[in-house]
Length: 632
Ligand code: BES
Ligand code: ZN
Image 1 (cartoon, rainbow, N blue to C red):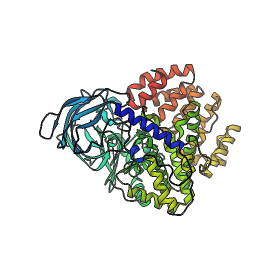
Image 2: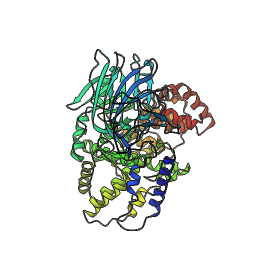
Image 3: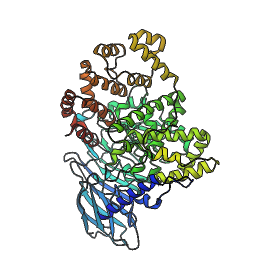
Image 4: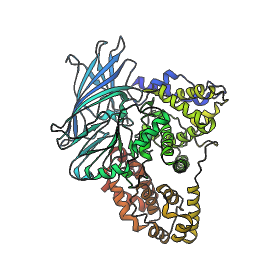
């Protein structure tokens, strides 16, 4: 506890030093680097004393009791005078702890702290090599979502999946849950015989008689990449090293939607070096999955809301694939450096999409990003959160989830794109490829990165780049003046079409002069997002009749349209809206809709009524955000 406080204090001090020490000179900003590297204020672990290097996990998944019974055998490396191994836990019931010789080890569980859970301190000697923790998870383990058959797509079998990022792994495995600590793992998992178990590891492709599955992850990963899914899923191959798992009724559509996956992997390798995880598979989860995608190594978890039928939302797959380099190979050292994971990944994602579908396509993605970013900065400013709009900021004593705004993603992207434009693509690509190769399976802080950038890129090419550049992009809130401007003829066409529409509401003219029949999802998103906030019922009706937005099967399009339904009290859209909210668990879609509702008293009533029905379908990460929004 005291140690936590001092390290937190040290961190705050570092942050102050960082912003105040902006004297010119190429050394900036490198401050007490070694200190910062170890100071993950979101983990209780003391890796400098004893660190986990391997996890051997034996588990039984019990759907009746909604709990996992398990033994985690941890291989540790410790100092010559090590006395304690400290693990992170959250709501775990510890049954016994022994060493490799079956001798009981004394342990204590510390005070539970907000967000963090409780430290599990185990007494060890320098000779202790293995620690066996036998435990079970609690009914409200935050990483786990247990679904009744009725909550799955096929409605026949129960389903379980985990979501460990950022700090929820500790709710299902007692582990050192810090992105700066990597370990290999193997597992043996017993599940009901009708179900298949999959992990972020080597995976089976079919069910077996015993219901016992074994897994191996030979590459060292941080705890937030531990993942498990159990359900009635089948496998379909997409290429020689890729495939997709989904519930039977979803499998054919998923296979068609992701047919370009192998091309994406090749494009990614061509850009930034070999794929290091052997296989790349996807699992399409039931609709309550709270994210679009999660880059669990070897097995990306994905929402079914990207199955649009026309491959138009697969940039999300490019994103999760890109994490196989940015994030999974080179990992943010702690959650204050989250932009290193996500900003690099968005940059890489757009480069993959450009390689497959052309610059015009990736520029549309970039423009949608820029709009998101500008809106988010304005909203955060209005909500007194402007300081959180710098790329690096301090999340000590806060939920790391608070850092999950479009800042690390989109501002991170534009920072890297600005660098690319400054030095030229060829040099930048060479730099990035080398960066991923030299830092594979390592962790990275913002300060290490800027140092590498300075020496390997700017100094190497004799470029006079001033520290003010980092200061503006990384440590200053808001959007820097030299933010790149993506260009899209297609979006210019959409903008003109929008003006025309608002003047005369003629579908025919949009078709004849602006080719709206051929518009892609992204053009429609641009169109709907740029409609005025306030529209009359006649206008909403005219739009709906002309373009069928309420009935669209495209989740991204319905999501932006849904905001207009709420804002303009467009009753014809209420039925679909309610059903969308009940059947979608993806927080990125839910939050903007609920936020629109809470702007008016009638909206709040409606939101509460819908939420009452929808909440049982949401994962903890979604329901906790909405509980807070609705003041529940
Ligand atoms: N790693 C993130 C999801 C995440 C971040 C989960 C932080 C928990 C804490 C994932 O790669 C992601 O960014 N998903 C996005 C996809 C998108 C940007 C294409 C999502 O879920 O919307
Ligand atoms: Zn991501």
